[in-house]
Amino acid sequence: MGKPTGFLEVSRRDRDYQPPQERLRNYREFVNPLPTQELVAQASRCMDCGIPFCHNGCPVNNQIPDFNNLVYREQWKAALDNLLSTNNFPEFTGRICPAPCEASCTLNIQDTPVTIKTIECQIIDRGWEEGWITPQMAPKGTGKRVAVVGSGPAGLACAQQLARAGHAVTVFEKSDRIGGLLRYGIPDFKMEKHLIDRRVAQMEAEGVIFRTSFEVGVNVSVQRLMDDYEVLVMAGGAEAPRDLEIEGRELGGIHFAMDFLTQQNKRVAGDDELRAAPTGAISATGKHVVVIGGGDTGSDCIGTSNRHGAASVTQLEIMPQPPERENKALTWPDWPLRLRTSSSHQEGCDREFAVATRRAIGSNGRVEALECVRLEWVTGPDGRQQMQEVAGSEFQLKADLVLLAMGFVGPKKSAFTDQAGVEFDIRGAVRADTVSYQTSTPGIFSCGDMRRGQSLVVWAIREGRQCAHAVDAYLMGTSRLPR
Image (cartoon, rainbow, N blue to C red; front, top):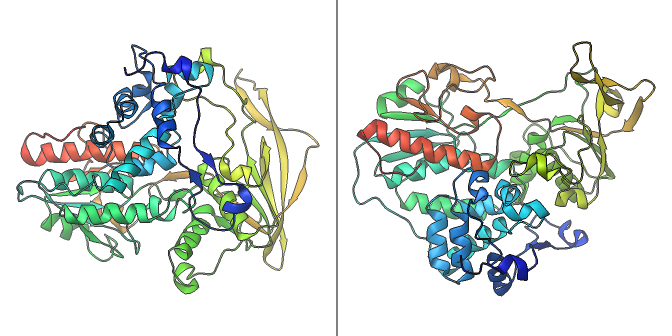
């Protein structure tokens, strides 16, 4: 490594944020990059640790010590080439990945991991600024045609890899813009959408064809695609949200989180209200907002509600509050369960843990409050731990807007999935293994959340790349694409 004593000489420093009072005025990204020399110093902290556990933590198999060393030596172009050899879209993961690699870093044993995510992000951003990132056209075509259904991170990664192998790839997207979850599920203040647009332009130059507002199973049948293409890849994501089956669920003002987030992303993109919210606007302005669900989607709802000008925002989590610091001896180098406070939480939010929602209360067809109860862990008759209501702990929360952010249960069943005729696993995801990525229907493959279930963007990119390798091998008998 470049500087074996770097971790002893340089303290950890990460990117910081613009103050909440400034960033709440708009939907732009608010992360302040590190100065170049400070980033170089941070890269020097990467230890010569013998076994780079960060590799175990990174789903796309980034060669983290290698690009850290190259940044320390200020060999930026080489660092970029190294990063792009394993990750098609580091500008996405460098902004929205929770960085399991940092949790696995040897220095995380003492809570000072290398700032891997920041280094990754600034490598790729510099690559774009310097003009080093250009289309990579295949030297010759294979004559094979592939249809990729879904333009989220898995579909995009799969399509780009297959195009670079020389296949003719068409991506079909039912929405009006390319990007899937990246476009409409993640707020612009976490990732601005021009980042997607420039990747789409690159991929179009590489030969990928994009068809938007085109729903497979509706605008064209699966059989017609199978007649025109040698392979079809199902990369449609896990879009079916988990619902809350309580009394009063039908009241107005209770919405799925993704409906709320999608509308706002369309407004930021310049759509008028009729196009952004054809079934009616969902606004948090001046309202008492309750977000049910403690994950990233719930956090995104908090940040968006605060930018709307909500009167108050409360987040409910059914699980107990985790510890602020994990027990390293029990968890490292695995992803730990601990209290995580996002930038959206810092902007203003009350958080309630170990709370269940019993019913929604309202009048004139609109929600006005939620009846909740606190929970505790107890030992059941079978000796297992289970949660039960705490007697006498009932309380009410004022609620004009309730956003359900409790995760997703799998891909939506649709004409597309029906016509594909694929089998589903016990979780409701499309059945396919992680070697062949083939479904039960010949010629149809699946990857990303549609196959894996709800997961991270970085996992979707990994699956898209691996699926591309499998498709290439299926079409050509062998593949030189990396997995």
